[in-house]
Image 1: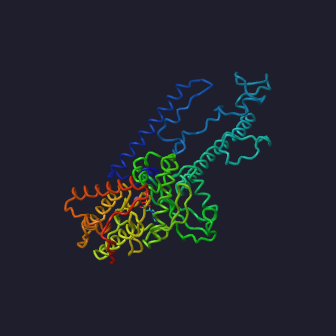
Image 2: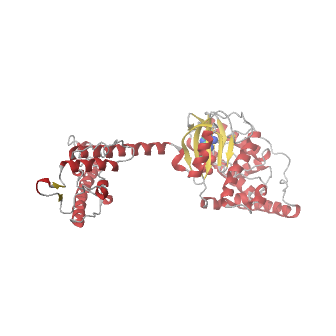
Image 3: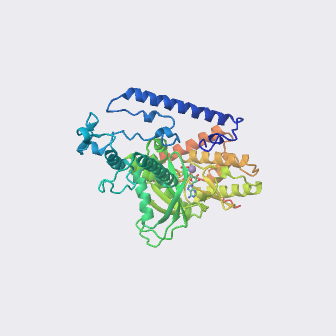
Length: 460
Ligand code: ADP
Ligand code: MN
């Protein structure tokens, strides 16, 4: 914005903007700073053959400034390829030959050749042709103009390159993951990966257009790929995952494997876990992303949303009170089916992980941490889910919304009677402990909790 500010042209100087004034002052300061720097550089280097550049300390980078002080010094011989091995190199005294045949370093022909040779120092993409081979002699003026042009071309291509990198998945993932993503596109499974939807602590999610078929990821050659996909890349930086240990460590489904695995493999297990959980939900008809493919720590699923725009999270939509009520009953129903039919507790259920799709249906996402109810902390997770859901809908004005304890009972059908949070929590922990003791006695496969028959499935 600085470059386009009106003060550049000297017209319409708007002195009412403090920002503008500050920028003008900063620019002036930078100029003076750089001028001083140049003086210091000159003083430091003196007449020395080897000079040290202070360029990196400049405020206004010479490539970005319009300053004409950045003229090329054609006597700069730092990277002169002629210098080393050409016989015409000017010796120290500044000239060769004798009498009439004397040739100084300012000789037009010598300079011209030098300039031609220096073109080799331009960026590799800048085509200069074989000037040396045809004994081209460039005047200083022409050389300077070419050099300026070469610089600006370099800058332009750097800018284009930067843009390209930002617009794709490239920057957010490590090279190995990038390769995995490329392979998915290469195999035809994905058409294009358009960009990043979300960067969380533990995962990065990309949007992609689906390709034609699954090639090497499953055996079903002609599995239909959804037109739009979400790619969830589980982050391979390990520290974020440490605090998730408790979810997976005690999950009997993963118990045998956990102890033997290195952290990298554990991260793959999160992706695998999400896949299994999504499949269970899919089978129970709960609205959730459909699994497309799993490759290492990368999970491809159907995209909830349209035209690259993900469906909004419940936290981000403003629903009418009627829709809010509908959403509540959907969520209640899903929680019950998740518990009863999928034998799962979401364990991170909140308005952040529920999407409002097509203006009418709540979809559940983010189930990598979901556990079975008999997980040693399963009921605590369920209670937390219930608290989040209950609070969200009660605050959202749904008078029918059960409170967290009622909701817990409605989902689990455990009929815990405590009427305050403390006692309720204590009973939950007692149940978990009872279950653990049962596991200790009867081997790893756990029983379900004793309940009063099937929980009532709530419709809308
Ligand atoms: P995290 O562990 O980072 O919360 P999520 O699975 O919740 O991972 O995904 C992060 C965000 O990415 C979500 O809030 C949602 O906006 C978006 N997202 C994830 N999966 C999908 C999907 N299948 N379709 C559309 N958007 C998705
Ligand atoms: Mn999430």
